[in-house]
Length: 614
Ligand SMILES: [Zn+2]
Image 1 (tube, rainbow, N blue to C red):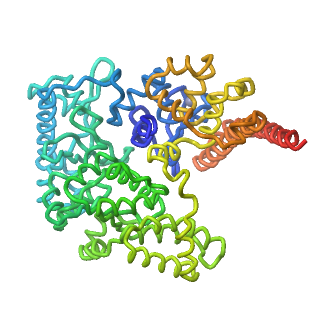
Image 2: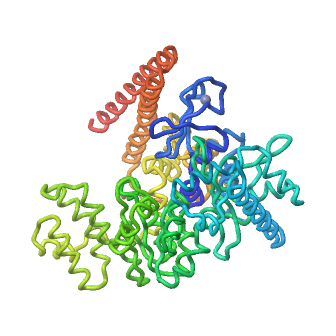
Image 3: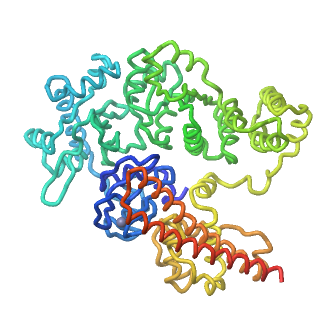
C-alpha cells in the first residue's frame, strides 16, 4: 500500500473537516459554511461515503482530504502529505521523519494525561456540572463501579477550565498543546474537550495515552478524540485493552466491537475479553496488538450492509498484518488462506438490526452470550454475504455465486472441510455437486495475475481505475502528451492522481519528473510506470491513442455528470430546508450549462467511435 492510500484509509474526512468547520447533518451527508468563501447559507458539503467534500457556492470545487488541507492551510501537496501522515500516525521516509522525542518528554505527556484523567473523573463524580454526564451514563445503564474502573470523566462546557487547572499544577501551556488537551489559536489556546463525556484511552500497560469524547449536546461530530501525539496513535490503540488483556489470554479469544460503551457494558456484565476499534476500520497496528494475545479473533458487526463492507476492509487489514506472504485475491479467499497458514480462527457476530452490542447486552445479557456462542465462522459468513443478495434460482446469479465463492473453496487446505463447502455451495445454488467439483479442478483466473501483492490490490481498490489507467498510459507513452491537453487536474478526484497529472504537465519528461517528486508521489509514479498493458496497447500506437482518448473522454464525462448529480443533491437538500429562490434558479441554470457540455462530450465520443470504425 502506498503512503498516500494508507493516509486516505486512515483519516476520516468528517473528523478532519470538523476541526476547521462546524458541520451539521444533511441527510446522509454533512454541511456547513464554506471555509473558502464567505457565505450566509451553507453550501459546503462533506460526503462521508465518498470521503470527499464539495462547495456548491462561489468556489464550485471539491476534493479529498489532501485537497482540503492544501486549500485550507495554503500548503502544497508535499506539506499536506507530511501533515496528514503525522495525523494518521504514519512515518514517512527519513527526510520528513519527525525527530523521536526523548523518553523523558513522553513521560511528561503520560503525567499530564494522568492528571487530566483524574481531574475529569473528579468533575464527573463530584460536581454539579457533572450531572449531565452522570444522567447520560445512568440512562445508558453504566454502573458506578464501571464508571470508576474505566475512570470516565466530564469536561465542562468551558474554554479554559482544564487548561487553567493543569497550568495550576505546573504544566506549561506548550506541553498541554503537545498532549492534545489544549488547542493553540492565534494569541492563545483553549480546551479541546468541552461539554463532553470522556473515556480515557490506555495502552496495554494501563497508562493514559489519550481520550475519546462523546458530545453531551447536539454538537457534531458526536465523538472526537485526542489528536495524534507522541504517545497517542488512535489507529494503534484498542480501547479497553489494558482491562481486557488477561481475559483475552485466559479465554484465548478477543471480541472486537466498535464503541467505547460497548466495551464498558460487556465488561460490566462479565465479558472482559472485549475491546473496541474506536469507530474506524481496524488497522494493522490494532490487529498486531490483539495478535500478541490470541489468534482467535471475533468481529462484531452491524446487521446492515455497511457493516459488512467495513468487515471487508477489516479483513484486508487482518491479512496484511498477519501473513505477509499470502496472496489474498479476492479478499475472502485471502482470509481463508490466512486461517490455514496461521492456524487461526476468525469468526463473525452479526448483531440484530439497528442494535449496538451495548444495547444487546443491556436488554438481555444472555442474548449476547448466545450471539458469541453462535459466532459464524468466516467462511460461512462469506457464503451468506455473497449469496444473500442473489436469487440463486436464476442461472445468471448461480454463475455469479460460483465465480465469487470458488476462489474461497479453492483456498481450503483440509480435504474434509473443502468437501463440506463444495456441498454447501452446490446446495445453495441447486446444482449437482459434480459441477462444483469439476470447476474446482480447473480454477479460473489463477496463474497469471493471482500473484499480485496485497499492496497492489489495495492501491487498485483505493485508486480510481479509470484515472490510474489514463495516467499510466500518459507516463508510459510520451507521444500521448499532444492529445492530453484537454485533461486538467479537475478531472482527477484522487489528489495523488491530480497532483501527478499537474506535475507531469509541468515537466518535460519522466527522468526530470522523477527528480522533482518527493517520496509519496514518486511511489505513486513508480506504481503507474509498472502497470502492465495488454499487447495490443503496447505494440500498436493507434490502439494506444484510441484507448487514451476513450478514457480521457470518460473522465470528462464523469466530471460533468458528477457536477450534475451533486447539483441535484443540493437542490433536493435546499428544497427541504426551504432554500433561497435565487440560489435555486442559479443552480438550475448551471445545470443546463453542464448538460450542454455533457452533450458535447457525447458527440465527441460518438465521433471517436465512427472514426475508429471507418
Ligand atoms: Zn466555497
